[in-house]
Image 1: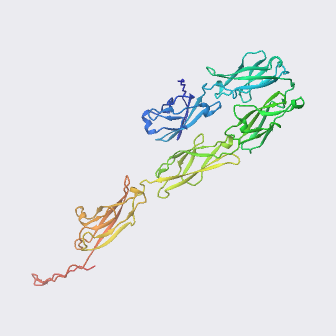
Image 2: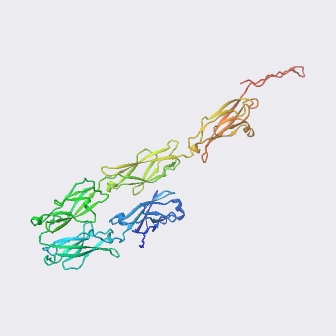
Image 3: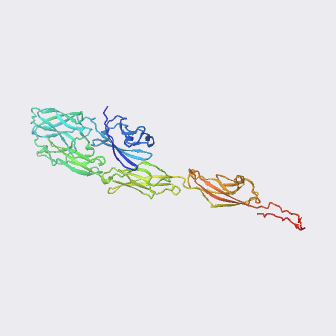
Amino acid sequence: MKSQVLFPFLVFLFCGAISQQLHYVIPEELAKGSRVGNLAKDLGLSVQELPARKLRVSAEGYFNVSAESGDLIVSSRIDREKICGRKPECVLDFEMVAENPMNVFHVTVAIQDINDNAPGFATKGIDLEICESALPGVKFPLDSAQDADVESNSVKTYTINSNQYFSLSTKASPDGIKYPELLLENPLDREYQSYHLLILTATDGGAPPLSGTTQIRIYVTDANDNAPLFSQDVYRVSLQENVPWGTFVLRVMATDKDEGINAEITYAFLKSPTSTSLVFNLDSNTGDITTNGTLDFEETSQYVLGVEAKDGGVHTAHCNVQIEIVDENDNAPEVIFMSLSNQIPEDSDLGTVIALIKVRDQDSGHNGLVTCYIQEEVPFKLESTSKNYYKLVIDKALNREQTQHYNVTIVATDQGKPSLSSRTGVTLCISDVNDNAPVFHQSSYLVHVAENNPPGASIAQVSASDPDLGPNGSVSYSIVASDLEPRDLLSYVSVSAQSGVVFAQRAFDHEQLRAFELTLQASDQGSPALSANVSLRVLVDDRNDNAPRVLYPALEPDGSALFDMVSKLPYV
């Protein structure tokens, strides 16, 4: 099992929804389940906090986080060569999101190369034809070996077996790739020895080093005493990405002082670790290089092509063509919601974070600089944090009874010329809180009830409304006060809690009860409940339900007659 060397670093801390950045360094090919570091400890979180914080990572399947310990764990094979190719630095960037409160943490894991790939040659053998007239000191660049590892673990040296005719040196191309160069030390004699076989060994710089071999097969030919010569050792050119297929790049040119067939030059690409023939085409007769595919700066920003010129005999010359790809603004920005709360209580405080938004643009330079804004007039605003992150926060007070939801469009625009932009929409729903008390439809109520009414009859109805939703807007009615004696109240009237209908519990008698007043209350079902009161005055109207009475006179002591007055109540 490979030894594990882990180096956690806490890089910086700042306030807000995005609060920390963590940096770890691990070697590639760690076993699944290996511990990278303790996220909880590095963030200052206790084990007791972990269930509530609900830590999660977005790491493209390479890592996960232990809900019990807060450890960052390797979840799948990490092959540095597959992830980053030959880039000198290999970093996995991802975010860890924690809830309650909501935070996002930037995590970077640098992947260190291990020497797990041996150098290898593209072919089993290298064939060379060398004229017997070649003078000592002539050099023959050979195909480089390929090693998927980088830096110290990549190819460092080339050697050949000891012989009296040739020596070998290790050279570096402009892009840093090591290649072998064969040097003729002593004159060749085809009549004496027409064939030489050498073993070429490529060794990397790992500890321990790894190596690979191939054969160099040298055929000695008759004299063609002038080799081609390129006008430049290195050709340099810049080319815009996305140019059409067949676009002319440049022309390489070599000359040969020989005549006839020995001066007829043909051009070809040297074999290299990447297949350049899929992207560029070289005319073997003219030396013209044209595009043979689509160039994408975001995929490859530079090409180094090896070109060989060969005369009609056996002589060759070599040059390098460096092609710099210039970025165009061909990628629109992207808006990514890292976290979103789309149910927002209407009593939320100003500044409450609704969403965390990440913007990214695959272009570089100004073409990749992105700004964001909200298209509509809404009670929300965007606040920039860092590294292309924004917070969507509440900017004005919310009122569900006025607006129940908002359609918010986030516009991301880069600084290219012309600029590109993208729009991402989201619907934010405002949830209800019990912030409205019931309101009676009248400020007070007055009803007339004829006496001798039947018990149980409806004598009035009060009505109130509440604009809140659900229980917060569900109204019930009750009697909370009266000028009747408390013990008599229930025997006189009642109110339906659901409808607000007031019922007479008994027949009223105008001669005993002419008017009374009730205080009714409408209450919602919120927590806490809100209520309102209203006055209901009941007037009992007289009916002609008493016949007249005649009273006979009685004598007073003085002998006068006293008559009892006949009284009757008016009928209403």
